[in-house]
Length: 135
Image 1 (cartoon, one colour):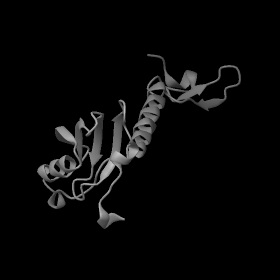
Image 2 (cartoon, helix red, strand yellow):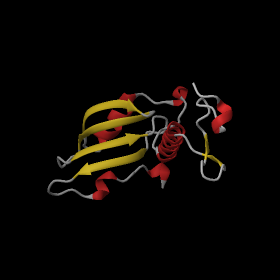
Image 3 (spheres, helix red, strand yellow):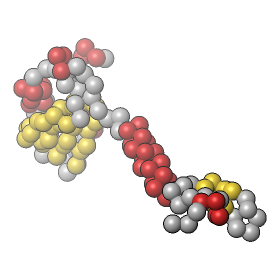
């Protein structure tokens, strides 16, 4: 191993580089440090953007069967209800045969997100909250 006095830096300290022409010391960003900074910024930005999660306390959740009954009263057929990101995720068919996938708040059973694949005869009014208590 070369003595650190001759070059102005040790091989263990790779974050500092000495310019041989001028003898000037410069700080250099390590590739591993740069990679770490990029990964952390991606994770933080992904967390900020992923605000679709439900945050209702589990103690306030209504049963899945109550959501199933609410949707079946509208004439919809429920194929599956599961918990995803703290929300109830429902897949099924509306009364006209259009496929839907929705996220519902488990405490209030209100729609948070809805995706619809319209076939013939699909209307947006089929998906609006028509509960008279909320108007």
